[in-house]
Amino acid sequence: MRVTVQVKLFIILVSVVLLFIAISQLLSFFFLDKFFMKKKEGELLQALTTLTSIIASGEDDVQNQITEFSQRSNVFISLVDERFENMYSLMPIVRETSPSPFGNRKTQPNIGNQYYNSRMRAIVDTHFPNFSNKPSFATMYTNARHDDGFMMLLANVTFANGETGYALLQTSVPAINLSVSVMTEFIWTISAVILAIGTPCVFFLARSFTKPIVQISEAAKKITNLDFSHKLQISQNDEIGDLATNVAIMSQKLSHTIQQLTLANTELSRNLEIKEKAEILRKEFVANVSHELKTPISIIGGYAEGLKLNVDTEEREYYCDVIIDESSKMNKLVVDILDLSQIESGFTKMDLDIFDLSSLLQTAERYFPACKDKEITLTILESPETLSYTDGFRLEQVFSNYMMNAINHTPSCGEIRVYITQSATEAMVSVSNSGSHIPETELEKIWLSFYKADKARTRQYGGQGLGLYIAKTIMDALGGTCQAVNLDDGVVFSFAVKKWERVVGSGE
Figure (spheres, rainbow, N blue to C red):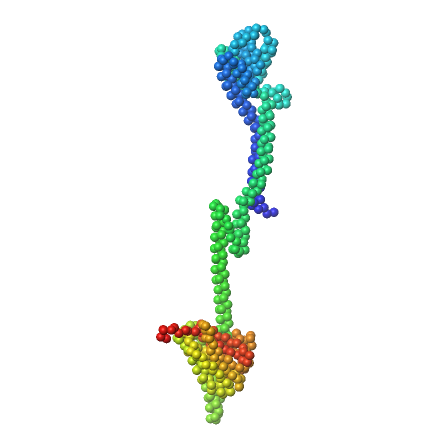
């Protein structure tokens, strides 16, 4: 069973309180009566000192002073001379014949006085057998239970007339026992009150003391679960406050470190993913290049072998035209691959300058003959001057690829439209053609190298599937965008670049 720090501290503090109560009870049980007896002995010695000074004063009302003092101090006083003849008791009894040191005489024998004298001698002989000149204490009990009797102090005294004698001072033992009993009961009551009040106080003290520790524990538990959202609100200026501050600092540093590690891990994963994709693309690229080169090489090889045979002049011309045509395709493929490699590696820098996009519409007029051969209607929409800070040569290359792609995929009697649209910050050049749609699943793939959505038609016009890939690569290098969207009656290919606004009064 798990016990919390608060419960442990509560148990410890309550145990300490109970321990002090138990110790106080044990001390009172074993030493309280002795303490009171010692205290009474001190009081009797103090009373003896006062009594001695009264006796030595020799005043006429000495007996009255002794009586008042006896009653005031609750001490029974008896005085005898060296022959144990009564000099004074609580009820004064003087000697029969000898002059009293207090100035009074009695001429008749007193039986009580004789009894008192003998009793005094018996007390001294019984309880003070080894009495010397020093004050001595003894206890005389009057019953077998020892709960009734007197504490006695016997001492030598000197009277005003120079005579010496004995003084016996007595105090009641039951009075001492009563004081001990009352004090014991008081200690028990105080202990119960302390326990009743101390227990809830200890509980609240334990809860108050352990509250920051519990908060630190909860924060540490959340940190182990990588939850750094918990904020410690502890402002104590002690070791617990220092611990809370250090935990908070540790939480912040761990959170920052884990965030950095997460970002680094994400970046590493992204880089690995890019590397894997690049490796896949490289392998596909090599395979595609090999495939694209294999066909023309095979054709060239076949027709070259045919030339070795005895073929007539007409067939020889045809064979040579095929070899030249396939060589041109191979040359174009190699040139395109080298161009792509230079652009992607960054070796080819873009020649940036102010370029009028509307000049591309004039370039489109070059394609009228090719469109006429396929009975395609080419519509060029006029556009005002549209300037952009870009590489005009590369944009013409992108536009040319779009135009050739549109001509190759537009059916006979179809239409190609060329136009420019503008927004506040961008200008978009679009080439749309009528014909079949590109499947939605293929719209993103057409920008990949050697990808051919319609492989049969691509083979028909001799394309390698690099035109759109080259266009996208150029636009990425120029910071532009390109896209393909299906229309109701065909497809539109577009590329967009940022506009350049002419500054008034700049001279440009």
